[in-house]
Amino acid sequence: MQARMKNPAVILPETLQALLAVSASIRDRGVSENTMDLAHLRVSQINGCSVCTDMGFRKLQKEGEKIERIVGVSAWREMPYFTDAERAALALGEAMTRLADRPDAVSDEIWNEAVKYYDEKALSALIISVAVDNVWNRLNATVRHPAGASWS
Image 1 (cartoon, rainbow, N blue to C red):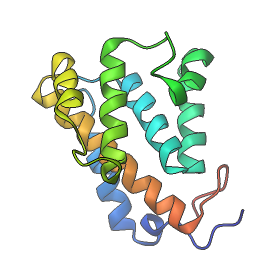
Image 2 (cartoon, rainbow, N blue to C red; image 1 turned 90 degrees about the vertical axis):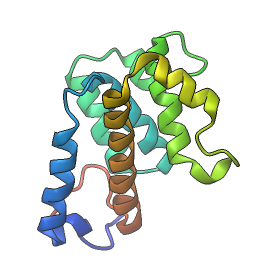
Image 3 (cartoon, helix red, strand yellow; image 1 turned 180 degrees about the vertical axis):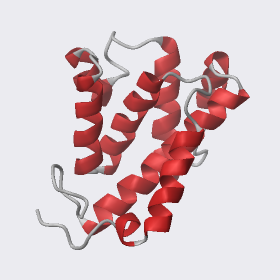
Image 4 (tube, rainbow, N blue to C red; image 1 turned 30 degrees about the vertical axis):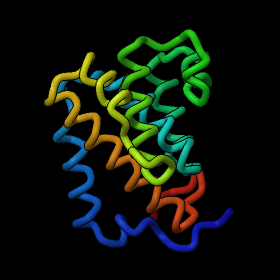
């Protein structure tokens, strides 16, 4: 696959800086980077974003994450490798990504499970992280940015 154009955030550098600043603002807010990375990978898989899926896999691998968990994130409900808190984050990320798939986009069941493990600050960071992941996924999928390609 060949990209249709450069990533729009690269063409508009102010946008790139703003997105990077948002991502930086949610670090160390009560959700481990590893959990955020697992959610990022799952959201990117759902959206079919090859570049984000590839980057997410490589980042987790580089950080020493077990291959069973990296591969298993696509079927996390059936895999024994995730904590209850990670499952809550993955469920919330999926619901936020698939807003139109159900009448109650983020059900009380999903929300109530997430609040068992994350306070408001951590939930805010997780919600913003998934929202930003979805932005990147949509930018990359729209311009068909392929995995392994440079951003320029």
